[in-house]
Length: 108
Ligand code: TYC
Image (cartoon, rainbow, N blue to C red):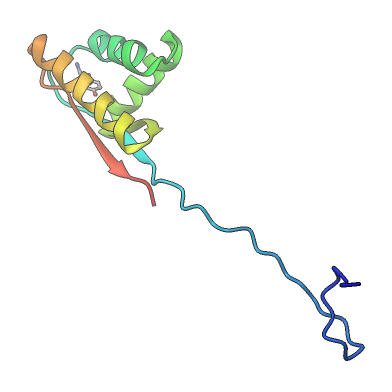
């Protein structure tokens, strides 16, 4: 009868170490909103609500952070979603003739 226990017959114990195969996780990208001197504050708040699902009071807070610090991370997404968000914001700003800039950056 064949044993299902690893045994080389020398009386020692065989240690079987199972490692879980690693699945590489895709990189994440930060979407950044940049300050400028011309885009109205209310427009930036609308952008944060409309494209990032951020509630009004949080949107005002983030807009003010960008206004004071020069930029802020407004979300972290997969490459494809981040690209879509950036394109949506840039298109919306362009259509309203505001110079608002939105970019993405790979997370470390
Ligand atoms: N600095 C702008 C102003 O004073 C407001 C502003 C905030 C612009 C955030 C862009 O991403 C921005 N009207």
